[in-house]
Image (cartoon, rainbow over all chains, first blue to last red; front, side, top):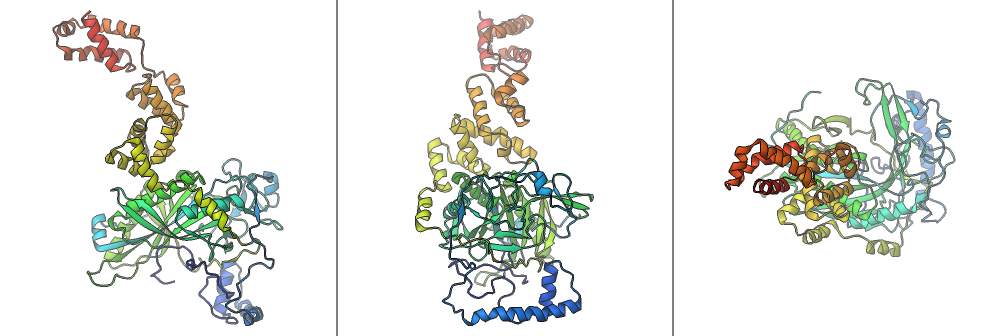
Length: 135
Length: 504
């Protein structure tokens, strides 16, 4: 990351907001712009594995790189028909403004809430010590 | 932790231009959470205000709270923003157990509000326009308690306990554009900006806005750049730090001042600033290094497939716009005229950040002058001593009750300060404190006259002087009577009675 980043947004990319612009391409994940489909590198896979806290061996990374590249290439076929005048869609059904009234409903009991927890102290979930910090 | 080297503030400003940016999180006071119908209430028994949605249980689906959307639009409009005709939610992916889903539902490339500005009043009365980049909707995270380790912080903790009562509470995050030109007023501007945001959300009635409770949280970004000669292009922006955990208006100001002095000292020695999150420590008035900004901040945002786009109608937006309360700057001008305060008095109120408290106190029945006197006087003094915000000490209702007791002659100012102390200590309402501490003024002339006659009899020389017309001699008797009454008498009335009895 550049050391000249402006002192505002905490996110890794500054979202374009001025025209409420909607990225047309599939690449809206804010990671380094569009590399184009198919360009999956071992570094990217290692980085992703790190983000996802999955330990992968070098051999597994190499294998995943090839497999992910194939998947991305397949999915990228959509760009052959997507033109700039086709708006991106995040949902197959054209519904908007599906809301819930601000009315309190039923909650879980503490016992229910904790019933699936591998570990708890009777009122709170117990998790292993966390490396890193709050987001 | 070694003390960081600091450059004197004036010298730092002489050498460098501060560049600011703020992210303010506002918790909305809707009845339910952002995406579930669990009560929007935390504190109390852990993990009781949760539904399957808040715990991210398989098969649960979020549904948007309509009221939260309306509140967000109102806030966007009050910030002078455009409201997006269509906006979407996005998943911000990260691995941290404060949310059970491994992502936070937020907004990324399509925030509900964007491109606005806010007029902020500096302590000297000048208006400063803070540009707003965006305001977006998201959900708050749960609360973690780190157990074990020496400090109770993350480092060295053996395990952590998680309470999800706060998970899913509706938040609006307000992000400014880069703020140039604050110059030596940067710390004051920071405080004034957060104070203005607080005023706006309070006037909209959309948040409780108590900083000490985390309803309003500020992350302050600051960088310095060297000054260049006139005519030359400005230097490139410096590396920024983001200071978190700034939980009072006072801390916002102090944290910015500290970071300017700290960064300036490093840069002046030819060092470099590390881009990182820094934590503000209220007790020491310092910041310490937290997480470095690195590629760990790769949130892999993508559109939230479980939620549909929010497309507010033009009618709804106009309806909400028409219902907006008076802008804080206009409101201030009106209040100043209504209250008849001098420029100095009013500026004092604005700088104290206690405008809303005084409004609420007058609404509860006190005169504006009395409300001002108590809030900017004794209450602000106690708050300063304790290093907390005055508004957290006492409620406007109790202040108005206190004023009423003084106006009725039940309390002198001196006694009222003791009653206030009792109220601040949580001993109850002013009436209850008067009763429990036995602080009411002795207004029974009979009791006063007995004490006065006694005092006059024991000081015959004073009595003679008073009778000779040396009225100032009465002071000794008044003092003795006040002492006998344990201070619980109205000195002016005692004086009247002393002169009356001496010359009787």
